[in-house]
Length: 105
Image: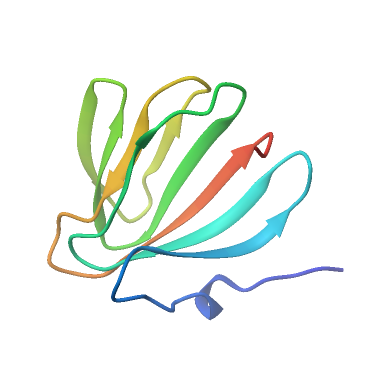
């Protein structure tokens, strides 16, 4: 059995958001994103893949198409295929997100 423990993925980078891959197949990926204050993933789109962000720690500002909202621990944000989406840590604290996309690019 292949098992990962989310608390093991807490390394941050001073330069840009840090992505930790937990699992990846031809059908999906599951990552933990670690964002220091001010770090972001610029808005982009995936034509054939849905993405879900789940906030593990902190608060982030999510954009999906024309909507922008701040969400904290426990929130799950859905970005359907073809939507412009991105995330910014606009808070003063570190943030961690569990991110799944299917199918993988």
